[in-house]
Length: 194
Image (cartoon, rainbow, N blue to C red; front, side):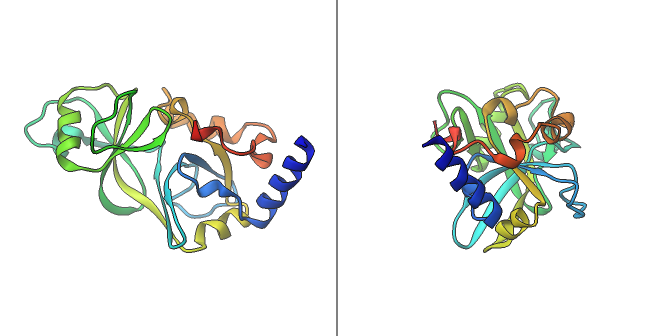
């Protein structure tokens, strides 16, 4: 039974039709990617449907203070570059009890897009090991990400709260890209849906 599952998974990967675009999956850029926006990035998939896929780059800090984004608040945290589509401010929060306006991405990881909730969460002074704010997003049109996966521009891994809030995100890509063949065989039907 396990062998059949691996065969189906290998087929899905080879055809580029794997459910990697599911919320909570991680895309790890391969050396084949020549797009400067995605070179050496790790992207968390936020949403996928027949028309689009959206995600956030997890490993690119920027030198913009959250106090600059939310005037009147005092914080030492800086923002992260969420992607090349300079649209909106989003945050990821690691918690067991999410705010009412948060959207679950993974077990204990929630997306916040509502501006008042974002401001309130920044004001609460939650540390960067549980709360990060992202400027911009990644976006793909219908079939675009599947095509990139098929061309082996991305490795796929199941996401986890520990990887999303990795303590050394600047080196996250290097560590994930050096994982052995696990990247090419992708571990079966998502532990991310716990």
